[in-house]
Amino acid sequence: MELNILLFGITKDIVGQQKLRYELPEGATVPDLVAHLKKSYPKLHDLNSVMIAVNNEYGQEDQTLHESDEVALIPPVSGG
Image 1 (cartoon, rainbow, N blue to C red):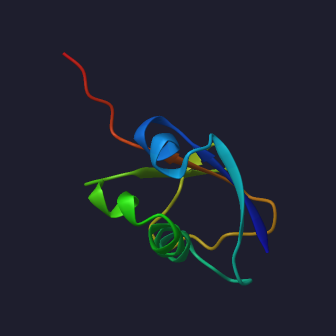
Image 2: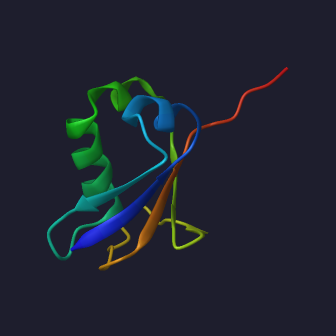
């Protein structure tokens, strides 16, 4: 299945683009996607936490993904 990935903040900088299409086997879950992305982009391991949204709602820990889902990687925001 093919997923649409949106990247924000430092995740966008690490991947080098704001959006990408990513291929995963049917039945893949949010943790499967995160593991694959970290394998493809090892600098993602440097992030302590990243929120995942699936189709504009926060993703659940073991949520199964579906063809054409839109997944957003949202890094923590810091400020002063």
